[in-house]
Image: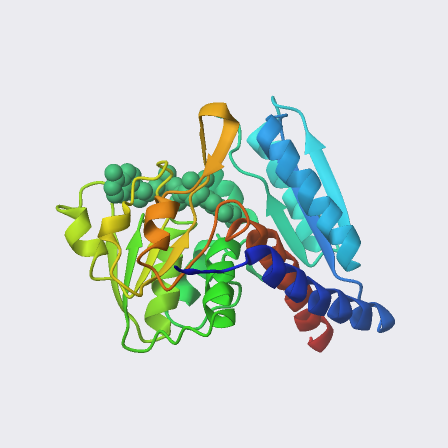
Length: 283
Ligand code: NDP
């Protein structure tokens, strides 16, 4: 049976270090600050924003929640970001996605000062990641790399199969694995014969958003499985993209859902904010 990669425990351990770093910065009058911008009142986004706020408080990070109405214009949002870009107390700016239809998401992301782009979504930061010289690494993929590190997985020469090619998970995590000298295959909805690809993976990273679509028999004996998916099935139960019970019988280690990748995303947001504050202090 596979070992369970406990994202909750790893996350708690990292948050202690982050809180200690934040306290050290506070002693030097450089309390790390995060601004979280929420446009509209999507209940899921609201929940994420309040989780981020609470996590900041616990870690000793100053947080500013900016809530704007659903009918906010793009110009109004850009003006707020401009103010936050210039606000000395703020080291990180996060705009909660998705944004309402009247707002061009790409333009908003590009308006964030790349030095405060703690989500790592700005094209400048994406480009630096692709070039192997990242400034900020996007939080979910960064969290996945931490989970692999904490599990003692050395990616050098390994076959990594990433299922999903989104800009926020699949693509960046593939780049990060490449930077760690893995041989990376990226699969997506047009990939032919997905099982044949997945079974090659010493490490399989599933970021699709389809409940339990990666079957246990697709997993190579001894593979490490990272399940990013968050899907609700009957009875409101949360499951990942991987058929967990079946995959457990073949994998050497696997992340559960919930309690795997999920807790790491906010942790890495805190880590990026503290890192940004340190950089500001160093000038
Ligand atoms: P997207 O919907 O943006 O991307 C999904 C990807 O999966 C696409 O590249 C798509 O291919 C691919 N895909 C869809 N169907 C198939 C299929 N049948 N076979 C192979 N590939 C397929 O999702 P995200 O990357 O944003 O998120 C993925 C999952 O991870 C979701 O469940 C999401 O909730 C979860 N998530 C969890 C986070 C966490 O903190 N734990 C953070 C972010 C996301 P194509 O490009 O061809 O359309």
